[in-house]
Image (tube, rainbow, N blue to C red; front, side, top):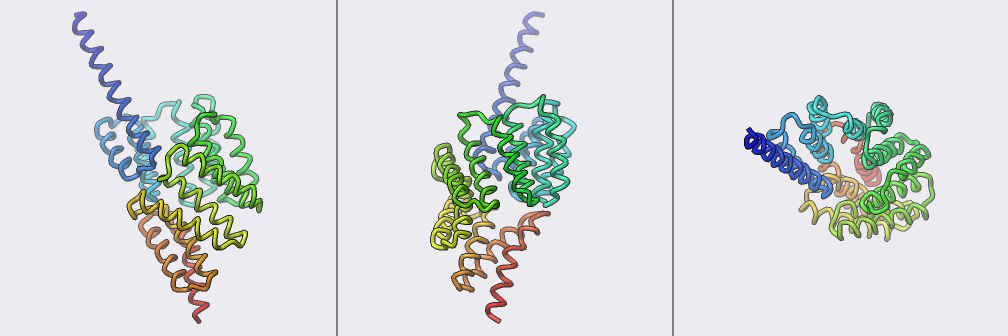
Length: 307
C-alpha cells in the first residue's frame, strides 16, 4: 500500500514538473515575441492538457499578435471555463486588448474596468499589464491625459529589476507625451525605451524596432525628415531580420516611410511603401481595416499630386 502511494506521488510530481516546463516554454516564446512558434506550441499544449486555461490563453495571444483578432476571441472564449480566480484579471485584460485592436474601444474599456475589480487576487505583473494596456486603449480613444494617468498608476506595480517592462512603460510614456505635443520629453522616454530593450534583449528584437519607429514619428513632427527616415529604416531592417522578411507589425514602418517619401515628392516610392503596408494589413482580420486608412490616404495624396 505504501509503495503504491509512493509511486503515485512520484508520478504526480513528475507530471507537475512536466506541466511547469511546458508553461515555461510558452512563457519564453511569449517573451521572445515568437508568435508563430507560440501559436504552434499552444496548440500542442491544448491537445495535451485540454482542461488547462494556459493553452487557450497563449493561443489567443499569438493569434492577436498575428492580427487574427476574431480567432483570438474564439480561443479566449474556449479557455474561459478553465480559468482559476487568480488568473481572471489576466484573461479579462486579454479580451480588452483584442477589442482595442478591433477598434471596439468602449467594449475594451468596459473589460478593463471589470478587470480592475479583480486586483486583490492578482499578481503585480498582471496588474501592471492591465494599466499598461488600458492606457493604450485611452490613447486610441483620444484621451492622452487619461492614458498618462493609467501608465503612472501601473508604475506602482512595476518591479525595479524588470527591465523589459520598464522599456515598455518608457515607450508608452513617449507615445503619450508625443500626443500631448511634448516632443523633447517624448524623445527622452523613447530613447530610454530603446536602451532598456537593448539591455534586456540585445540588438535584434522587434521591441527595439517599435521604439525606433516611434522616435522617427517624433522627428517627423519636428520637421527633421532625415532623422525620421533614418529611424524608420533602422526599424525596418530589424523587423526583416527578426521575422525573416515576414513581420506582421511592419505595416506601420512602411506607412511611415510612405509619409517621408510623400513629403520629399517621391510619389512612386510613397505609393510603393503604402502598398506594402496594405499588403501586410490585408493578411489580418477584423480591426485591421481601421489601420488601412492612413496608407490609403497616402495613395490618394499621390493620385492628387499626379493629377
